[in-house]
Every structure is written in C-alpha cells, then in structure tokens.
Length: 266
Image (tube, rainbow, N blue to C red; front, side, top):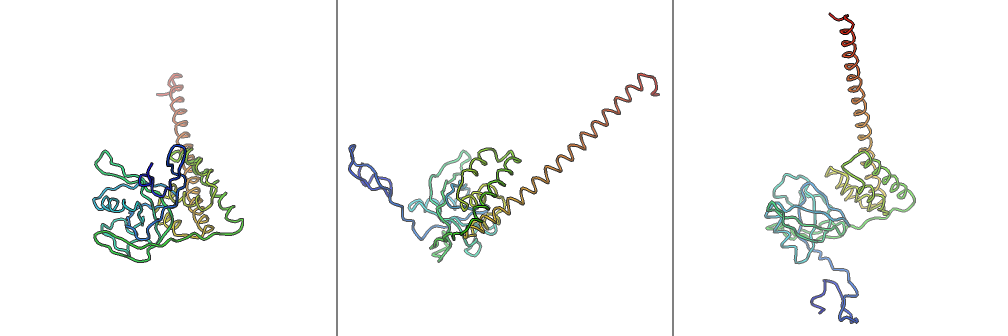
C-alpha cells in the first residue's frame, strides 16, 4: 500500500507484508463548516443519525461538504421556515462527520452522520448560496461528587421502566441504556432516542454541565413515566368497566333465557 492510498489520517510503517497502516492520527476538523439546517431533529455527540435529503438545497450542502467530510448540524427554532437566517437557529449545535450517503427508492437520498462534539457559531462567513460559519467547540463541564452517579443510576432505572411499558421501544433500547456507563452519554442518548419534543432535546444539547444535563433528562423521563402510569391506570379502569358491562349483559341475557324456558316471560 502506498501512502497516498492510505486512509485519511493513517501513517504507514514497514511490515512483513509491505506497508501497513499502523497508527491513526486524529483527523483535524476544520473550524469553518457548512451549516446543515435541521427542522425538527437535534444531533448529539457520539451518536449516529440518518438525515433525509429531501430538497435540492440539502443535497447540495452535503455535496459541498464532502471534501472536508464534516458538517455543522444546527436546529431551526421554527421548522416551517424555508430560508432560515442565522438568528433563526438555536445557539448550540453539533459538528458531525459524514459517514455515507445513500440513494433511496423514492428518488430522494439520505446521509448518515456521526456527531463529534458540541459547538456554536463564532462568526458567520456567508449565508448565500449556502450558510457557512466559523464554529468553536462548546466543551462539557464536569460535575464532581456522587450525585451525578446517583442521577445516572436513577435515569437508567426510569428509562428501562418506561421501556417495559412501551412495546415500541423494545428490549434493544433497554439493553443499550443499561450498557451506557457514562452519565453525560446516557443523557445525550435520552435526548436522541427517547425525547420527542425539539425544545426538550435542544435543552439537553445546550446543557454543558454534566450534572444538570442528566438531571434535566431525568425530569423529562419521570414526567413521561408518570403519564405512562396514569395511562395504564385509565386503560385498566376502562377495561374493568367494559368487562363488567359485558358480564352484566351476559347475565341479563342468561336470565331472560331461563325465564323464557320456565314460561315466566311473556
């Protein structure tokens, strides 16, 4: 293998079978990136995300960004805007790496990206024909003490309990939850795969301090858990009423038949 044929960031060394990639150097992420507008979804670090490219503009952004292989994924405050300006976006987004672009049977295409880290716009480079900005990383703020570990454990328990009540989540969801041992990553996972409202997801993304982020995720999950429990109680009460009504009707019909057989019914 020649150096020019090696994967980006790989250093070749001499081996028994010729030149082999032995060391991978961390790729340098450019600070100036194309901004990809997200309408009702939110990207998160360390998680893969499929994005539908259902407009020509979206497809062109990805084509332009493929040279650097990175995008800045930023969510719109108003998903109905066709041509959002910088002020129309949330402050914090995610620098993401383009993994693969796929053509879909309906003629559209999608791109699979993987979030790298949180970031915000430092300077708008241009907005036409494409939104390009210089971005800076928004680093996480560690939280000391055992409280964050307790929050992490409670979040795991609450998510698995909700999953046990919701068939659409399945066992894979619970397995993933139980195997995420870093509190900040579990909070991000909750935002990406459990929360449905954009503002809730964005709050998780924008909360840089780990403790408050996990606590915010837990509050949302506990709220959903209470709704699930209430829904289950209501469903149980309705089912019991229906069963009682059916039983009463069945008994009345039986009584009518008995009376008719005894000649008591006219």
